[in-house]
Length: 413
Image (cartoon, rainbow, N blue to C red; front, side):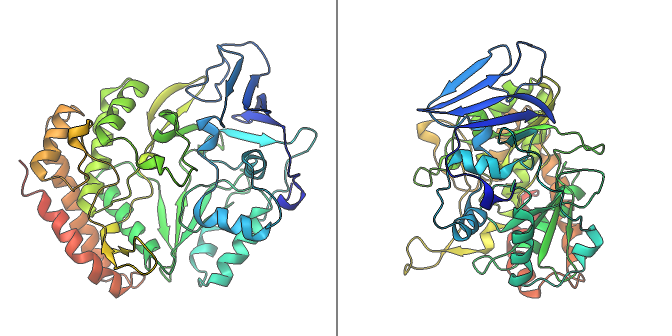
């Protein structure tokens, strides 16, 4: 159903889990989720909402559903297209339809599935010459088939496989405030993959202006995997922009949560790799929504999701007020350690991060992780200097940050 046809006031949505009917979401004074049938073995709507309890109630939208509500550029575009219509949570979920990251899908009772949009081959996308007008056309064309990706950066989902009825590619671009952002993320993700870190697959367009990211929650056969970010697992709703809840907590608390949820020590080692990489490339935006878990079945085989949304943010400047001075982003998104006395968000020294790896994540040889990342950065940097898609200005800005990251391994501690 096109967004323009979705009613403003919605009190009931049908919810599918992994492409099968699961329950109904109701909004009255608060929110209520009702499983359709009593079956403890059916797939759960969320890790915190197992089917062993048939009815769930909350004053706010359930976090597993809140996590996919649009924010940033996409939310602003929706408000511009529908300036007189309220963007309520229920209406946004109806717009998301079956496209959200994870395995939940939402339908208005009595309405069928939206039309399947024209697929765009990966090669076709990579050869496009980016302009703002081209990206606007993408947004307008594919919003009618369901929105589905959160985050502040300009992005849209595009289908590239006829056999799978949902978009499987995320197309991201930069903005005037963050020049070269697509190429920046491409270099970071490429370096991480070279370092042996599990990452989402990425491609960069021939002009270096658009990044293509494969969804990691859709299996090769088109089946859907459950996904929940750490903010959702902590029971946080992050759309209250005044609270910046995705920047609450610490990396120690994230590790503790992931250890409890996955029940596997090896997953903490993978988390440490992701965290160490963010530190070494100067990524100050590794917040609660940029870590998550995947699962399948009822709520089984829970494991850390591949790394995603990583850029060297230290190369960009920001202003705390419209006419204020430009400041450098020299802090992490979260403090390393938990506790009121450990609230510094400063980048840790190698010895401190190594101690975190040993004591919190059970990594026996953190120095080996640092060295793998340094090698991945070095190899990627060598290739970037002759890659015509990478803007020279971006390379000049990233050089000191990555050189510092490569030197990080020498101070193993």
